[in-house]
Length: 444
Image (cartoon, rainbow, N blue to C red):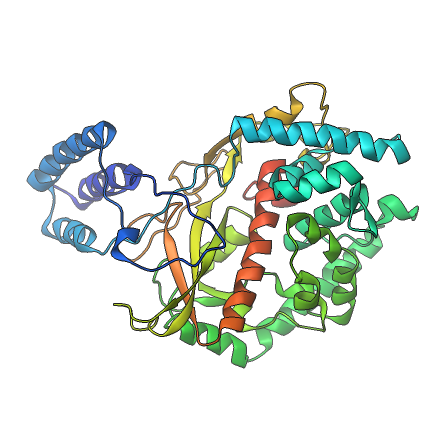
């Protein structure tokens, strides 16, 4: 048999059955609690559905062994003997339960009524509702009842600031909060070109710059391999983008909207990110990853969620022993079924700006149109694939757990803070329909 059929059979045997095999759900735990690293992090697959998949695997395996080359069999052996990473599922990480969604919609109507008492023309947009679905319930209740975020900021101003943070995260500058200041929000083509040139020069300066001490600290921490795939020659990638505070002008721009992050938690993100130029250009704001994963991350196709910090007295992984360990869960973000319907006509708003009618089912539709996730091996409508594989090669899937060690608790806590902010900003973009590989500029 020729090599091509062998590779095809190997792909069918490895990628499809094993990639789709899911572990049992782990028991949800308090995200603020410390989490221990034990052998129970690795779950076994059980149940009738798993048996059906195993039968299919056995059938494909017999066929594979009868017809494949020695090289293909050796590849399968490497796959089967590779250590499996721990997995913890959370089905409500992106899409809340129906009960929670309806509760949030009730609070959203209360918030809308409160805002319209002082601003009758205000309209709820998809990005506003996506932010509301992401807010902690306690903060949502308080903002809905008072129409304020703290004593200084109206709810509508805070929603706009949070939306600006999402756009800044994905590289789309929001020059001001002019929606409420009465200033002209338009940007001339000339000014847009100037901003693009400034950003390009900034990126080129960063590329030309020798590796900083913080970059080397990050790469050393991860043994100079990608944290998620184990591939060599990774990049040290910023969790909160470098451009947030790379210049004095960018830092001032961030100060104008960072208060919007208060909708996502009572955290001191302001002093962490705006205390000075390059305040977050530190190893605690970096993860080592290969270039493909970096590209998917910048497009919002995946994110990591922090599950807590633990002090690990001893571990089979010597790099974790005696360290403060940040526990991260990898998530592919979901696609939206309705994304192709938006932006087709010149007068049609971007998905994030479409108006939401809370008197209809629009609020639930925002969630119902969320589909399957990137990274599942399916071809995108625009062509090509969004997927990643580790060195086994097992496909990188949602729920996989990764650990980042630190000598000092303060640095571990700072990483948790920036990971938490990254998580909510990517989730907001995903829910509002701003995530679409290869056409990201069109949606954001």
